[in-house]
Length: 128
Image (tube, rainbow, N blue to C red):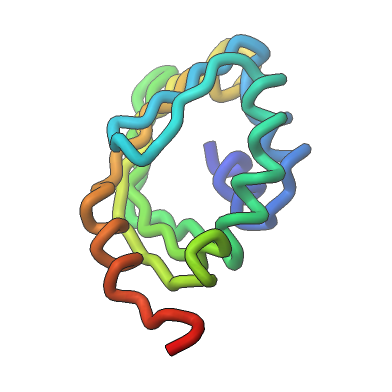
């Protein structure tokens, strides 16, 4: 789990994908998020995600681990390139399940899409 977060913070798509199981399931509870099933499909989307989320940084606020499950509270900050590099900071929670090889088998991501939308709407426009 910590390797996964560190790889995201390094913006290393190959390292991120190497942390998840072949049948990885990524689920988002926010309507702004997009889920995906399978390591290959996840890896295919990572380059675009990391390019659009410039300066992406996750800061772990709390981590609770029990058996093969973990709950990781985070704050995430980035500049959304597709929105004129608008700065965004949002708090969220990952629920994670790890398989026998120590790979992330499932991730459910909770974050407030309306907070992100508000920040994007309030961001100074590039031509202003």
